[in-house]
Length: 125
Picture 1: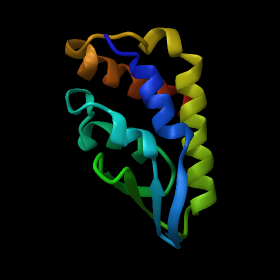
Picture 2: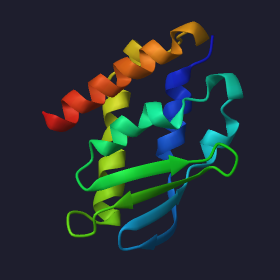
Picture 3: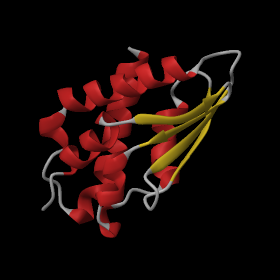
Picture 4: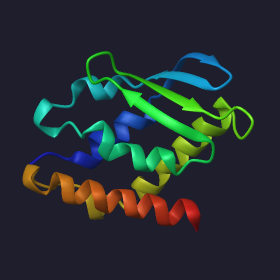
């Protein structure tokens, strides 16, 4: 078993802005490079969490580089607001740590969906 919460928390906790222009934000998330391939969550699975953030249009990330590129509507939001919202996601996951830690690999997809629902509900709440 792996403490998936720890990996997810680390993934978001140490975000650093690499480059930002209005409408496009590139961030470096060092911990995603350390996630074993069998535990890597597919991009299309994580996208719904980020698309919940107002103005975010798309996100792509690379486990190899540790970078993520977030495209957003610059008339709706900005890079600082997006980073604040990402920090809210970290806090939400922290609050629900006991629900998502120490899952087995065969539970990963189900647990990711559960995390997405938790985040959605609390971001809307």
